[in-house]
Image 1 (cartoon, one colour):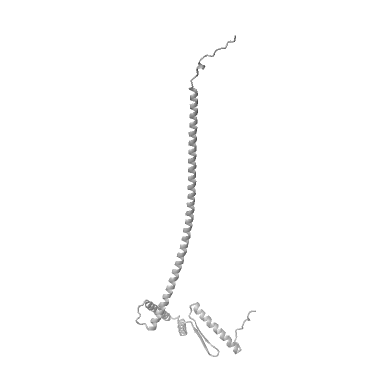
Image 2: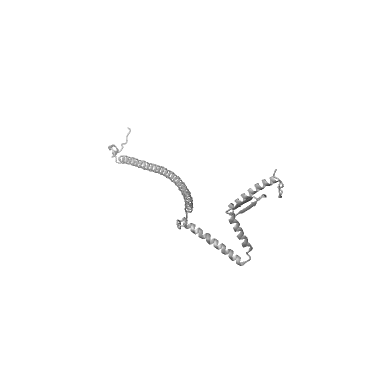
Amino acid sequence: MGRGKIAIKRIDNSTSRQVTFSKRRNGLLKKASELSILCDAEVGLIVFSSTGKLYDYGSSSMNSVIERYKRVKEDHHQLMNPASVVKFWQREAASLRQQLQHLQEYHRQLKGEELSGLTINDLQNLENQLETSLKAVRMKKDQILTHEIKELNHKGELTHQESLELHKKLDLMCQENTQLKKMVDGAKQANEASRSSQTSYALNNGHEHDDLHESVHLRLSQPLGPENDAPEKSITLG
């Protein structure tokens, strides 16, 4: 079951009232601190207990918060007066010029200029600030270099993989060329064998034709015998 709703009224029991004050005071101070950190706000909190004890919190300095509150309060009451408005903006411009001058001076000191008016503590603080800044710069440089090295290693791995793929394709092409060469050589040898067999067959046929011609020629040119020249005699029966 959830907690019951607490009525917002004065707690009669002094012990319970003191416990509730302690808890809610701590929560209020925590909320003020979180508000100043999260929202970059200037917060000032003042609490007096029922016994008259003071509890306060200032995000920067309680005196500066109070002075700013008084100044803004006075300016708010005098906004209807044009002269007050002019004075307000004059003070704001003077404050901004002072801040700009301070920043420019600090920038020159970081560059190693105009250090004659600084004390030992100021120089020590400036040195610590420079060392902190140098560490941050070196850390950022190392991060960038590490990232670039990783990118280069990744590109090198990709290039190596592409080289392996190209070598595989080249080997396949060499194997295909070797097979094609073998096929061409085999076809060439087959053609030469076919041509030689056809030539020998033609030569053999030519020799047989010449032998037949000679035999026929010899039979035709054979002279007739003397028996063939004498006429046949009739036989007379008595």
